[in-house]
Length: 439
Image (cartoon, rainbow, N blue to C red; front, side):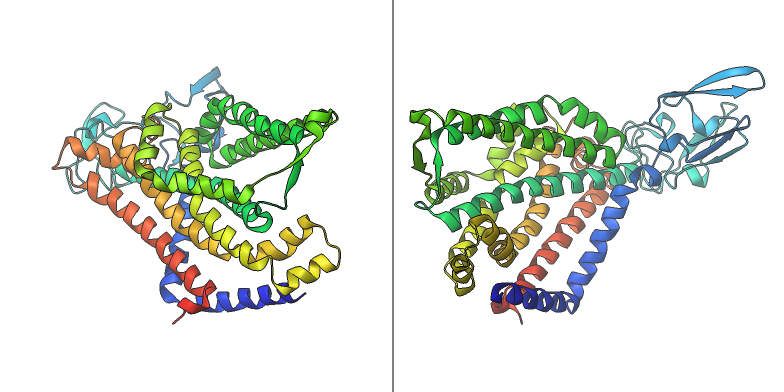
């Protein structure tokens, strides 16, 4: 159809514009680099070695989820507690450490009390003597008050910041595109639903959130501490539970609609409702709203993702609604209606691919804003739990000692580079998808 061909041409032109934009290409490569660091964080920075040959046994502590391991030796069986073993002093046949041989939350008391990157650093060997630190164990970006490695904190902070930014904007995009599409396409006088289905779906949303996210908050938190992929798997399980609860309540609403009172169909004023929600949220100072909610709720990554996601969807919904209002009366949409296509096919196959471009731009800028908000909340101590190291928490440690410049410079540069890269990428998408703004 005409709409599909126009969408294909628009995509080709957008890709050509993005490829010819050098700053956008550089920002794209930087984003790929940051994603690689986030995914491979346990391999790049870890106090547990990648490989150990110990008494004839080959061990891979960095890739193991077990807290202890029983190994067979010539003297019998020996139990190694991974969290208690000092791997740097272990008498083994062969050992391979990560490039940064420190975990972000594990202190090095020998080099505590703000050791600078170019300062003198020491290491306690197996005999108990303090010697000059070997190159493989050096704190390249210094330490904080407790002796925690700053470079390791920056690496793991990349994973936390990108996870919060991407997941929170995924929630915001899901809400914004869904509400904007419904408001723009149906308006106030085209969508009807039985009373029973309507009220049961509302109840399903509340119940689904409770059982999918609140009841599983500890599982999600523990999985994030172990592995990024494990966290994503658990998050998908929560999302499936959430959808399943909504479906069950919807089916219950169909049964309830068998009664005369709940069977009556009513118009859902989607456009007016969505516009009022957008106006209410936009009239509030978002930063103060997010800080207030974060201060009331328990410090948690899940809560932080949900807080940002549930407050950042307004721009996405507004842009999506405007595009759907424009597209629903175009000729190729009228042709689809004349051919007898149902509403779901028209929206998903024809309207959504042509109207989602402005939302992509808002999502790119939103990720940068979400990272800034996470850093600000962590700096204030109300964002994430205290045992999780983020760029904002590293900046907060710099308040205790203004001479420790490395606690401000390096996390600040990381935040600045990441936010700038997402903003440049968002501007590139805007120029590529909006012909009026192309030079």
